[in-house]
Length: 129
Image (tube, rainbow, N blue to C red; front, side, top):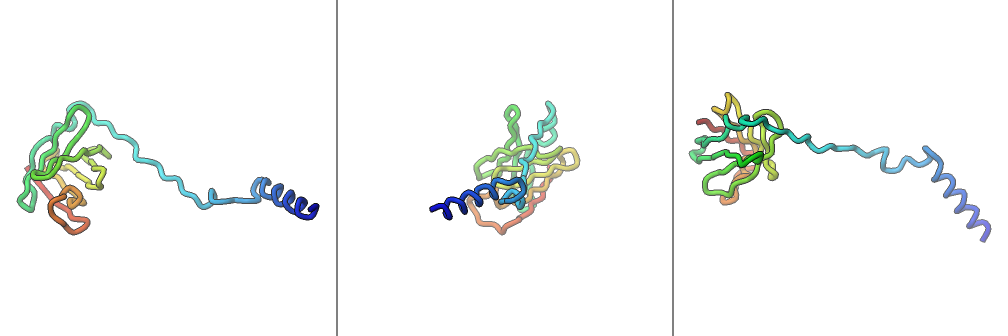
């Protein structure tokens, strides 16, 4: 009984020593969530419009207060979150990048906006007003 108790006590003391056991913390990586980007009043106005996509579809962007949405006609609208000036992302992973003061837009992972038709992964769509 004493041998088992002594071995258990030694093991407990050794594990409790600083630096004796690195554990999973030594191999862990901390990933921070993207910082929330807030748009200035009127900043979204350049983007709030309808665009003709290169595949012939039409897409629209609009806001309600401080919330921003994309609506591919014939599909459900999705909320977009601002990521950087002129850059937005949906929860599904679609990335929308406006350029030329909103005259053009590039949509990456376009297939994630479309629920009615299967599209290849990483589909990029370009649109202009």
